[in-house]
Length: 158
Image (cartoon, rainbow, N blue to C red):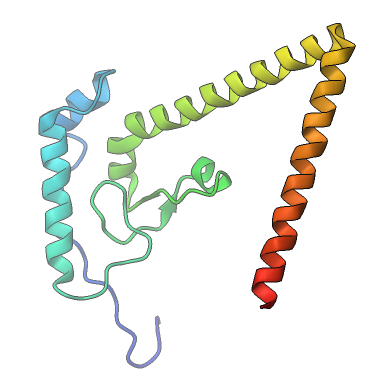
């Protein structure tokens, strides 16, 4: 079973550190940035994986921990148009804390944006002149976007 004639399979990466290393345990338990030891282990895992490819093309879907070919993908990242892959549950667990901090930051940014929009809406409701000004600004922005699109289309046709 598998690919047809001449199909090449990526080499299997060298054995990599599991979750149980002291630096990995510390990384999972501490709320701050990854330690130098954790980053050194990660860099060594990446070095081992890259060496195992020895001139062959690197995989398109690389584990964000070690760089090995990966099949696991973060669904939240995929929904946002990002590509975050893991080669296995061990490396997903190692990266989980820092990876989730990224999602938490994005969630906080979305909350702040919703609060900003809600405050603008309240201000517009309280001040009809501000509402009219916002509508005019929106219409101007829309017209500028349409003009830019028309210019791009004209440039593409030339």
